[in-house]
Length: 249
Length: 371
Image (cartoon, rainbow over all chains, first blue to last red; front, side):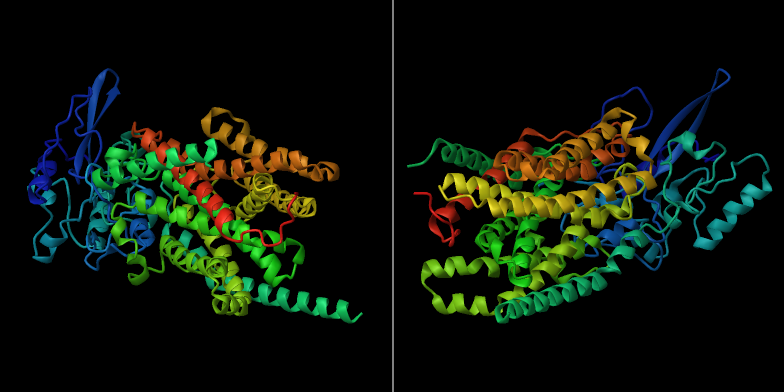
């Protein structure tokens, strides 16, 4: 977060690599554009202006899918259209998606978007440039960044680097790695000199694997089936026997 | 001769069907006010969650009659199964309209993902709709004079009903489980790991009330004698269920955000209060009196309140309770007129089909005629 200069090169490179069309927008009194990630914008820079004793202080926040280690979106998808690939990216399979949009509801970071204007719409989100990674390239946004804001590598290398930077620069960063614990841990992590909740990062993201919550229920389904089955059979036997007895008596 | 009410139903259905085609041709953006922050709206909150909850009467009455041998309720088993069948068919219709790729509605049947509650829900819908079709089918076979088919269904009806009860119990609770994944988004007033079972208990309330209401209304419409024994029996059963629901709701409210959270004002807390007072506490008080339980009008009022309360609960869990989080980006949601008309058309279609079946099939085999 301390390195970004807000040039939006990543935002443009992402559009170019993914061949996403431009959208007409209107000026809303702030630099952030568009006002939200959308089906043609997988990543954007959000501009945050803070007042520090009369002096404006800017922060630039790069938004895109965080590629959770245990993604809620993938766990809720009824047809496994979204999956966490072994290499790290959470990827989307157009051939499976039925368009229920449960992934959009479940994502704690407001990432998946929808092609609302289309009659045959798809879910859209950052793919971590999974096709580039397969070819041994690095993601387009990382490649184009002029200030090496993003440190790309294996999970544990990235986490080690984040911890090292915080430890080596006392007082420079807040002691919080966003994405270390959020939603059970994400493959994109952030370090910042300004507390994350002042920068509009989603607060109170549960620090657990969200899919555990639903799995906890689904795991009980067979047992519940059994209970109802036994109760039903039991009720049937008892009431029939009572009837037979009352007829005899 | 069509009554003015039937004409109105047909008008709403006609308009709704036109708008359904408009939606399918032009997409969700053109027809609804849904957006990236509000991926689900009225069609999921009311049509689908409400339609399925309404259907709970089917498994309850079928279970009571065929499994628990409660012969008293035999006269209402057919309308209860019909309501459930229509409830599921209409929920599927709403789902078709809401899905971005409706022609792929069959995908969950072959593309399994057992970690997904939505997959569990989809499998339940498939199997239970088929089960209801079998439970409903004798009415059709009788009309067609297919006696062998009627005898066959009667032979297998007990295991079929048992299977239906199992699926229903799980399906009602699974719909609540859909919202377990959003603890950071759903207001604490509604958010609890017990949500699946709250959905189940409230669906039982709504199911009993719906069965009671349609016994009353179809009795009036088709001039049958309304069996007050059935009505007050259902009311008494419902009294116990509503009591249980109130205790559970209060327990999880106290355990979660605390009872005080319901009285802090603001839209969410007021919606919660409305749901609890009008939909649970008032009908509970009305049904608690033995005298009022014998009074058809007061039972009917209580039933309407229960149905409204459970529908409001579904809207609250799926929309009001998430509104704070979802609107934090500056987004908003209020159903478009197309969403509203389509919803009304789906309700109208339900009433119309019920009337149609009542008129042409033997829906009330044991009803006593008043004249």
